[in-house]
Image 1 (cartoon, rainbow, N blue to C red):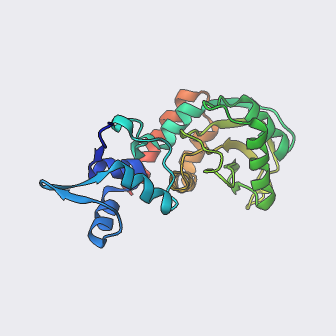
Image 2: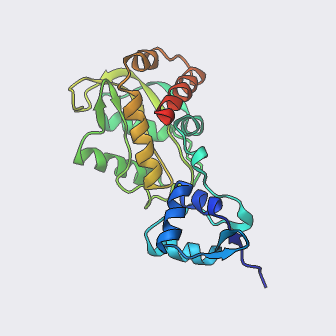
Length: 230
């Protein structure tokens, strides 16, 4: 018989992609199933998986052997871009064509339906433009979780020609930051980071002058730390 896996507070926090202090608060409020063992709290894997499902919390993978737990440390813009890739001179004359051309170039690790992803991205644009201003757009799907992305990916595309994206400030877009995330929490966190970074004129100027993937990741990681320390 397979021995049931017990998790620590930190492992549960990593599994649910939330801060440790939030798990601690749930413990004291009696909102999460746990037991006090020794000098600390422990959690049964089966109980946590059932509890998470009942509360609408999506877990990308199981915690078999305490592996494959998605850590917040792995959900940074820098790592997302590293996995998603950086592309230059993306062709296209309008919103649909640049998004379509981008989706064809992205190396999705899972066997996902590119047409489905494209339709989801375009459906999101039909609701409201993802052009956030200052020449930047952040295309993303309406149903991140339904598409079941198991890993964070933030592919970045610099356009060959600026295009009208119906952005809030009316400025044409020169770069696209796609966000494909394993959870809504990660998605919203990355949106907040990007919005923060793009308010900095120096960051934006440096972004426009990036010539390769290494330059972009270095710029992102340097400025991402400012957000985390703010």
